[in-house]
Image (cartoon, rainbow over all chains, first blue to last red; front, side, top):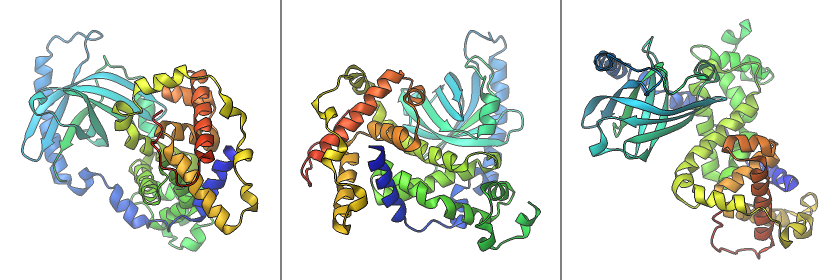
Length: 175
Length: 220
């Protein structure tokens, strides 16, 4: 079987189309915060404000017993929602991030998927964006390959920890 | 490494080691010529891997490009001393798995279907038939025979479930052990070994069928 597959692989390699140009790949790889920096900055400022509101609401947090809420901003074409998520499952293995979270306040108009931008809590810089798929009503899953560097710093992160990120969830924005 | 920033000659860059090219694309802004050289170096093997996974020319090209886009999004953290081709292949495979994920949850690849494979570890008569009994020697084929064999192999691969195709590629092309694959799928080594046997059994069965057979795809 191995010989047969390697033979097919070699045939496919011989018939490969021309490679794409670097300039095109670089352009396509640009994240939305680089293409629309002002829009991102506006979103981040709103995200900062949510942190204060969540902080007040969690005047008596019980670390180690319930997951800490994390600020989130939902951007849709027709509306923007300041809300929060609760991380239900988090595992970083190798460079793979597996995350499941519950999104507050959007149950009535749940979306099947979001493009989720992780924003560093401390620096408010964008870390990466990843697709999130709806698994249950109000719950979303992310299975994404992070940069190995970031994965190493999140390796020991637990669901009950205060998350080192906030989220911007984008859906139907057309951007 | 100093020459990187001033050297735009792709002819020279083509001879550079991966580590130097990766260092050049990690810089801000990234050096396009270095990226062109790196893409040129690994495009064919990457495309071929994607072609086996997707069993489709256009999807393979899209997947290979998506792998490059993903790598470029994290280019600042690429390790010049790492195994770049392996990382690129893994990124492509993960991107392909992502596209299969919805089907994994709800379709024929759902957990209940996987469980049925767990239970089906027994061998049957088809395992005793070797591929050599079914196929001509690929090294002695005429052009027409080669084309026919390619179509047969593609058809057999396409009729495998995405899971079993993934398992075949991981085991026989990437060279992962059943234990390593099991870690990724959170299954035992024994279960993965059963999946490998099932994938091989199905490949044999598909290759044995007459050309042009278009029956239902296997759901396991």
